[in-house]
Image (cartoon, rainbow, N blue to C red; front, top):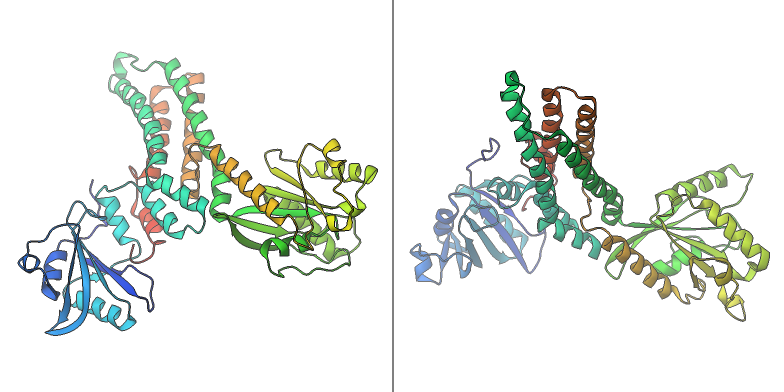
Length: 466
């Protein structure tokens, strides 16, 4: 595989966060790596100094610049091709002084290395086929992961499960495409190598698999950005108090006056390793107040966007017929039955005993709490975590990358054209064009097909030292 964008320069960068720390790591990669290290580093190992270097072994010694010691460091050499980039790589663990970091980088550059571009180490790893493009993107997701779910998602993709699925789909198409192309070579002899009914069946199967993947994007996207949880209900039932109790801080204004919350309030919190984005909404009621009505409109929008909905009701004023009316109103809001709903009976502190009538008239999960006293808030946390685990376990492979999602949609469009052309009996050359287009879009996901523009856009989002 040839890469016009890939230089033969030796590159360097600080791979740990900028600023003072206990240690810092400077990474070097390229053909001159070992020669460069030998010119600035005197190891305690005599064998190392003679160039007898063992890969994947750490060496203690001193970095010197024109005879003056800069720092005592640990250096690990990873020889090609068994390194992250597939080239000779050195990682220098120095003391975390900002001054030392800068002086060390200056010295390495003086000896011939140049500063790495954003994501250039990972781009070189891709170029040397250490992993494919989808796995490379998973590296960035892993670095950015801030919860258990985003971490698990990135790890799965980095291990190549998604890539293998795409490769398998693409290979099945290639097998048929080769027969179609063979027909074109013998077009004058009017022969048919590809079974049209088998091809139609294959297209249907691949379309079904792609639909499963594209449908999973909604789940993947909310996991990546934080699972949105909308807190809804009538005015003054304790929605804002509940938000404050969950976040354990006074995030929303609490008042006995109905309609206090006039706009959505959002905040995130990690519960048991899962990142939730809580949304406190304006109370649902008829109002003549223009500002409040705008807030209510936004509430309905957040209901549509949420993956989980907490419907809060005031137990102290919700009995008998009023409870039934409340639940009917609630059901009228449910447009997507795939959402996970939890009914929250609030203000149990105002009641002598927990009401039993809810279980008789509603088949939804119901939790009884006191947001004011922070009673049973942990029950909500446990229920949310359980819902997310169910959400993530349902799908074998979850698509969380928008680029992959759009490539799958484009593949599906091309395959739909293939199916339509087969039904109408269009010529082989037109069928071949749509199959090639489908293969192209699938290939862009894992990097069999790429452009410098695509690669530049992907790797520019990486941190410099990765």
